[in-house]
View 1 (cartoon, rainbow, N blue to C red):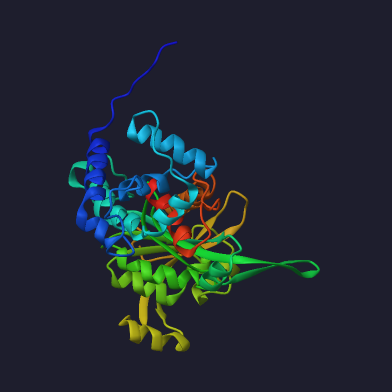
View 2: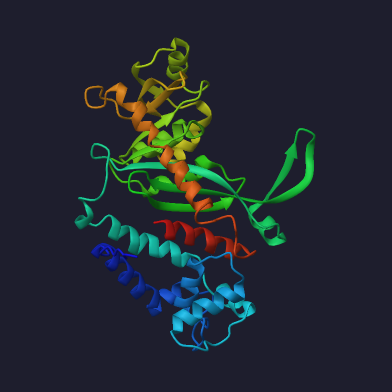
Length: 357
């Protein structure tokens, strides 16, 4: 049998070395441990070991995973025995914020470094981003119910008597480069748009943000514009009047630029956020392969630069967000939680986002 070996890209080697160095830094460990006395003794389950074990979530028993991992880590027979109880105590000392910092301060800066410019993909010079939310079912413990709130299972006959904790995740995602830029995990009752508004702080000028029709609203559009970025969103049939007019017309390939005025009940929030109460937007109609008409709203106003016929294919890029969430839940087995505490759930979530990147 012939073995094939491919050279490891230099950028990947650079990333691994940068991560290795950061995880071993005393100041990094101090920032992401629960108490000042944690990870100070010479134990088998050091901070870097806990970090790696959390990344290697497995369906094996805890004891078997610990035995196999430590045997490889120490590279010697007769590795010291570590019990599942010791592992539970060790991971309780570790804070999920370590994965957030590594993602924001090490991984993403290397991915967007100038030397990576030739490998990065954009759409006509715009970084193409998506924002979306998804629900996560958590283990049914009292602590998680208190933290994230409960979801009651119903069917055609009403409530079934089953309830479980439900969290909402939202990831600001680079659709063309497969990178999660900002991740949030909040109680299920927190709205998707509220999380998206928080994540607009990560936008850069000329970014183009895509979203589904549940997000389309004046406040989010104004918040994106205030960052110097652009938006493209799907409209519902009950949204802005120009969108309703295009739905009634039922013709694809139509484009209308119009000034929008904020609804009265949103003006106080806009003023509180320092956002304008008027904006100019463009509405375009596209026909799906199924024959259904969709209306999109965008801040890309110039027909000569961005022809109406381009928007159907452009908006289809949003599907990459769905496959990304499918990968988190499927390949990375996100909802197979390795612990039943709030911190354990956050560790699993932010480790999965980091690992996907």
